[in-house]
Length: 125
Image (tube, rainbow, N blue to C red; front, side, top):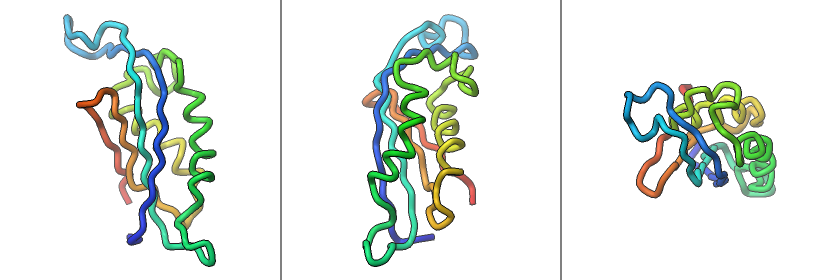
């Protein structure tokens, strides 16, 4: 494990409903959130730059993910038919991890759907 970790945050607006929530649960109804996603990656410092990776490069890797989720009904996004925050974090990690350089490790994807509620996914090594 590298001693250096960086993060990048993206936000998106989206609607969803949780079809497997118990009958009468408020999340079974269509509703929306202002989602905040934080992605943490780690690696050794590149020389001579002195960074793990350029923040701009990480932002570029997240652009397609953002475009796929922003202002969407998440249930209609392939792989997110039951779009819990946990599932969204996993979905993002599955798309991001293969794009990272072999020297960079995805440490965590954290999805915050409200100010009080968040879920994280940490890929197993």
